[in-house]
Amino acid sequence: MNRIETTFDRLRREGRKGLITFLTAGDPHPDQTVPLLHGLVEAGVDVLELGIPFTDPLADGPVIQRASERALAHDVTLDDVLEMVRRFRAEDPDTPVVLMGYANPVERMGPARFAERAAAAGVDGLLTVDMPPEEAGEWYGPLPEAGVAPIMLVAPTTSEERLDETLEQARGFVYYVSMTGVTGGGGLDVASVGEHVAPIRARTDLPVAVGFGVRDADSAAAVAGAADAVVVGSALIRTVEAHVGGSDPGALRAALAEQVADLRQGVDRQAVPPS
Image (cartoon, helix red, strand yellow):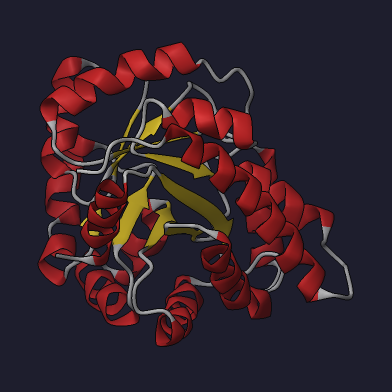
């Protein structure tokens, strides 16, 4: 059982829903990423998503785009991201880390070499936003062999036929995008989330995590009613952005901890009978 499976198994036994948070590696400064990841875990996060900075993000709104720009200003590369995970893993052997980004950096390293190096660093999953399921089989093949789960995205516009094809590739958990558009947008429709998550559950035993549009305790609680885990990204990046240029790194860590505690409280409103 890998770290993702172990974490969701623990959550089921505890009767709790999961909280997954996203930060961009190297934002606001490469030296702060690992301490911030530890701070998120201490505040109650179950799974960490770490963004690989990329120059041409397709699915990310302006908030996360600016996070990538700040990281790229410090020349953060995929090698640097893997080194950050290795340093995080030296002190935290348990919390799952999922890398999220785009296919180009992994393609440049080579999927097989990436899988080997990611597994050695302590990465548990990879989500590449622009990898269609029709091409994912061969490209993602080395990942599960190395112990890294390919996390697949499902959108409101995904057809039933494509859903089946996507779920065939999925490992770890399924990431349901709650709305069309880019990250950081508004218009979260919780009723629609429930309607779309149901057919996913009918086709897979994997946990379903829901992201896009979750920004506070109330929206986290609402989404947790339909999902196994709630993903929060842009709301945290806005907090990072508010502290850019600050002279006290501890202030950012404290602000994120307070925000995560609020989100955790929202997610925990949706307790379920332990199984």
